Image (cartoon, rainbow over all chains, first blue to last red; front, side, top):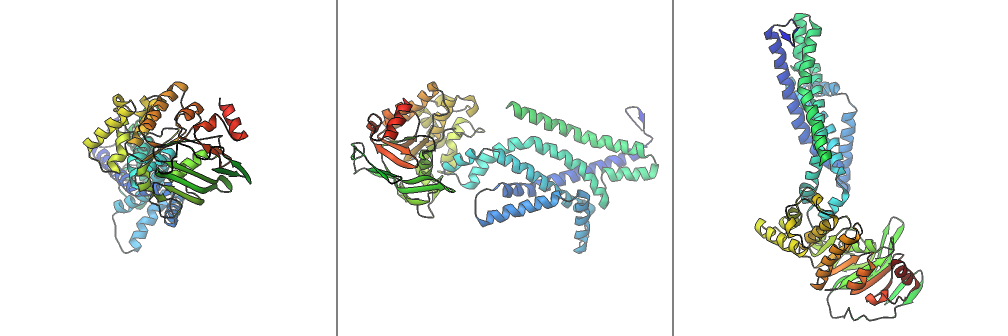
Length: 225
Length: 265
């Protein structure tokens, strides 16, 4: 087996095994992004809320505490806590589910912060103009603020996808079969760590680089607009 | 009519203005309205009536409280004291339905505040569609009508960024008109425009005045104030220092207004 003429000394089967791990890396990334979106959007809304009484204050503080907590814990530790925490509760879960939950909790905190910034980047006067047209708070957000915030949000969100993909590699600590794990298995079988992990690195790069490029493109397009 | 400030009382030489006969409906009534931001008193007890069909112009130096007074009328600022009645709603009492108030009271801002992601027509149609639940074809018809009124029927499909400042401001006026308000507030709507663009916006406002729209304007355009005002209110240090017909600009009763007008000319 050779890549770009480099003799890597792996059989096609071994290479396919690593590719299968890469497939699971993509699956876990998708989990992390979808879960992070579902949880991160309400977090962003709670954090961006300005007006309101005690209820919205509590919501804002709660969301703020969550973000601070998650950002203060390394992802592999979150993985461990979720994996063993769930099994203490008496549930036996596949590593994919535990890793998916951990990725969700982790990415929600960061996506929530990114999107909070995007919502707050929409000028206050836009809220005011919408309010003065007698739109309800929900209508103001959906029809006036969100479309403007989304335009700003595309480049940093795509950029963060790269972080999600790379950080799924931490799921190796709870034994999830991803690209890093499959590479480790092949290394144990072949004792060719340099070749094996170089292949893994290349695959990670091939997944992430197009996303980085896309993120920069989106940003450039937005600056022109 | 008297204006009280710092214990000083100024008698207005024109107690009854012909522009405001008492039998006409009062759209806005300020009674000793007070407003403070923290410890800074911005409105220190102002009393003004706005009658239906009248153009009331608030003038005064920056910081005299005229913009704050305007923003109180549609509930953008809550008042701290006194009584404020707008289109039959008592804003000094808790529990005012601000959304219903804002269907009666439109506002146009200095910085236009159009929605940049929507076309001109979509800007105009948004509130009629979502708030008044108009159907699409009805809303389109309405948009055509109000855009025609401000002379921009041909710009319906343009985005705000493709328009000049004057055009954007006229779209903002059309957006406000589309809600068929009983009263429109104008907050220094020409302050961001050069003289030529100012003219095109003022002509639109003039047209509305002729059509009988009730309006309250905050402006620094003294020439315009002199030509459209049915009632002129000179604000100074958070109080109504002088008010009357547009003639008070020609013949001020107080040295403050005389100086203000002098500087404005």
